[in-house]
Length: 146
Ligand code: RB5
Image (cartoon, rainbow, N blue to C red; front, side):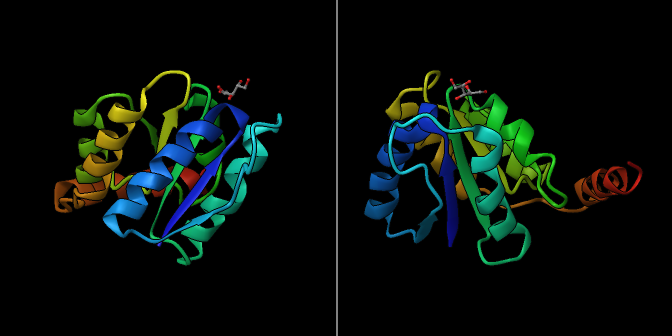
């Protein structure tokens, strides 16, 4: 199960990505936004990220105007490793090396076609573990130091 979330700036791209997930038969829970009415990205990041941390969802896809604000919000939540991507290499590598559990995209930055490629690259790549697991563990250590 995927968790989806956006603010108003990412709403439209989220809706387009949902159509692609439907075609692929990938289940998701949409935590909103449910319209283009203005809302605040830090608040919209919380519920989908909590679903990931609690294990109710395995990964999340988050959207705002740039992808940046909602990624900053997501990364404040313990256990979240969110990456904002606008190229497929990064979307793949952030799963393979960083074990990212949240992909963030900018609805005002990437088009629908590219977003779909980013989502597929992210979802279809496994974490490689080994030396990367040590580094991801060190990310978790940083969370304990603040
Ligand atoms: C909203 O106007 C915009 O600031 C937001 O969607 C996002 O781009 C912030 O990083």
